[in-house]
Image (cartoon, rainbow, N blue to C red; front, side, top):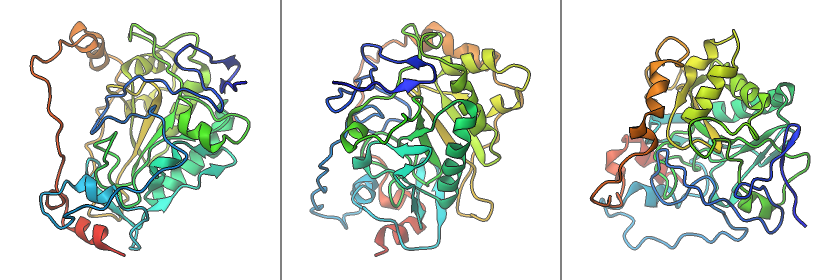
Amino acid sequence: MTTAIKAPGRRLERPLQRALGRRAVACAFAIGFFAAGAATAQDRGTVDPQPLPPLAKPDDPNTPAKELFGRKTAAAPLQARTIGFYAKGCLAGGMALPINGKTWQVMRLSRNRNWGHPDLVRFLEKLADQAPKTGWRGLLVGDMSQPRGGPMLTGHASHQVGLDADIWLTPMPDRELTRLEREEISATMVVAEDRKDVDPNVWTPAHVQVIKAAAQHPQVARIFVNAAIKKALCRDAGSDRAWLSKVQPWWGHDYHFHVRLSCPSDDHECTGQPVRPAGDGCGKELDHWFTAAVLHPKPSPTPSKPRPGPKLADLPAACRQVLLAP
């Protein structure tokens, strides 16, 4: 017998996006945003994660930084601070979001990516508390950062400094998910098959309201969503539109929305991003995403080669201290 995760007022049982129970099969759609490896938000995890084997030459300066940070299973016991840029940095004094709260649950526990700067953890707890007031039962939280941030072995090139979090576009069910379910169920695909709009059989007013609630937090710098979702938000926002300026269309992001916080005000080692342009972003900036060149890009004649990623020396110097801390 299977258990479907429900959106507000609607049962979501599309063939490839069913949120199943103990024998769930995760959807195989790839999410390409900032991909640094083969894994995506919908790849299944495991209830029995095994430690990575030791590196033969961990002190080799040519070792990719992702191999080093990916082997750290606990936070660096240092003062909390974000170091560097979202896609080129690390995290000191990281804090783990508890895997269960009254209005949130953490997914894909085997990845050990429920870490962030304390500001991010507090933000997620606040947003989760707000969620029921928007018609969204609670948050299913995907990837945040690794215990010490830094480059990841799979799935992201950002999420390195503890200020990014993926929130599934599936509301939390009215029960605690099992460990197996958290590793295997899929979030809900909300974009239509032609990629030009959201699926009207899935999209609800609660999707709009929970994204709006996140965007209205003053700490939030960006929210990345699929262009079709941005299009729906533009259409459904009504007269209160100031928050739309923070919502940026990007590739993938059809199963989750990606929240990015601004650098903490007292964190001088953190490199932020320029403020988004004024306006709601619902005009020409959005139209570009629905051109044939973007919707149906021609494949490259030469296959891309896997990139090893940055080395430790390519990251801010303070990241060495973070990595080597006990």
